[in-house]
Length: 466
Image (cartoon, rainbow, N blue to C red; front, top):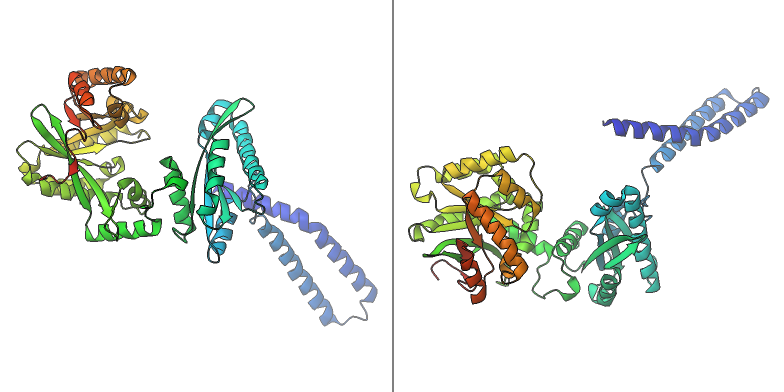
């Protein structure tokens, strides 16, 4: 048991003792006075039973008081329901009715806590909770279950399907998108879904966070979206049968197509493709990232013999997978005694958060490189961790963030790209840019000396042969 848990138990016992002691004392005094007055006329058996009942009563009283501290249903900061109570309550309700769930998040809460202090952060949370409650009351919604789910995240449960609440969500997103409290800027983002997708509250909540992370408003979703239960089953079935839909997009250097980037998708029951942004969160949640990466790499290796000499296949691999010793052993087994694979596979990696044991990470990457695998660092210029990795890791290729390719004709993007390109060349790496979809963009990329260029202007996403 943790020290904090021991102190919590001790504190609860003291509180229960203080609350129950007056009742216990009153019961003892009353019982004693009665016995002193009528001792000679009361049977001894009754006296024994009375004291026994008194003991049980006192124990049960203390137990109820002690357990009562475990049953808090409101969050002390926001005064909304706690996550535990909300989950327990809504799991019961979902068995009886359809519900719409709205996720509202203070996306800059971390910055507020750092800049203005945690006390002000708590004030913002309470203010947000109050605003949400007042807004619902204005729209004549009463007795609505709302919970402080975690951090800056709040969840609202409304009875019925989301079609009834599209206008409510639209107005809420516009009204609460940006506002200030005591000169502190607050940035809110929302997403919405309903229980027609799944009866599992856990999956509904995960879906809400996925939608929000992509900044998607569900009231404008495509009808081709796949519900979480279906995606989970598709993922499990595909990994067990090792079957996915594989497509490739060629990337070009001065001599022509030099590598092909692998794109992996799922196929639903209607034959429609499900993009990675939909199923990868499920893969990660189920703990199947390593197996998924191994499967797609095996598919890529199987295509290498069909390539012209020197052409490569690039595969996106999770950095956590690259650091996994079991994955390393599996790849070394695949590469052993097959010189034809050396220099033909590129692992493309990026990471939102910086992994501080970078020296250990770099050692693992060098082991892959010695085995003949090239390492490409992705999203350089887009996320902070990639720039740190550019300094700490020894790699082969640098791929610039997609937004730079999209906006390569803009003066600011060109200025940034020129600086990054100079850095990459100084370090002795190859440079790679994607999302080149127009001739003007291609001309700018070649003028800047980018080594590898990728985009729909040069090649569609298809099979290697096609």
